[in-house]
Length: 296
Image (cartoon, rainbow, N blue to C red):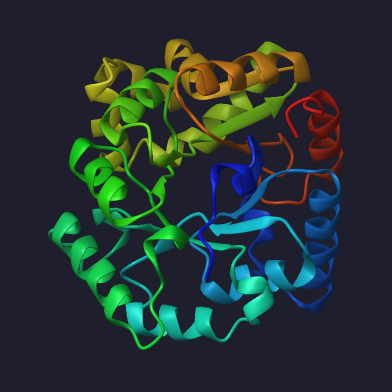
């Protein structure tokens, strides 16, 4: 397969757990297919399937589109064996398979009973992908890397890194760690709401769960935040660093901060007050596509 490139990733993508088709019924899967086709028409570069997706979830979005890059964001190495993943990817039509990027992560100790030696487990998983009957090549995989060791692994064994829940400052550090050759594609959560208090409430509703996971809090502490920033769903300082809150122009400014810090691509996750990011926020996706017309 031809490797995915910076050009095929595009500058701006969409990250959404709502594209996770295995969690819904036939009507829901049809809505996902229609939404994916529209996102492609809106010229987003990559569609990231969030919420611990499977290869099957990605394959459904690939089948619903024609040219857009599709990525898992992020498939847990503890829930799917490398051999199964490689076989499932090999089963995707050859003409479409080249658009698929396998985003891999080690998840979190509190969420995985067998969690142990995550770095070594990822190395072994990549070895198994390389050794599969039909390998998943480094040019078609990215790692959910936060710390220095996993970022270094993403440089040597993958296309690059897809950090989640990070700041522009982390992006600058990640770019230095990765070097110029690897692709850096951070996620950025967005609340399109000009009511500041309400936007922060929406952000805290999402953030509270992640602040219970030590991989994220350890990374934020490395970036200079304090334990006190984690109280009550996140301090204002933390929210302002992790989210884009406000109108579409504010989202553009925040996205530009990540791009200027060294990101090749920014995956925008829309959070809404009524859905908490779990629905298909079509109106918001359309609004952002208009605002980012010069980047898409």
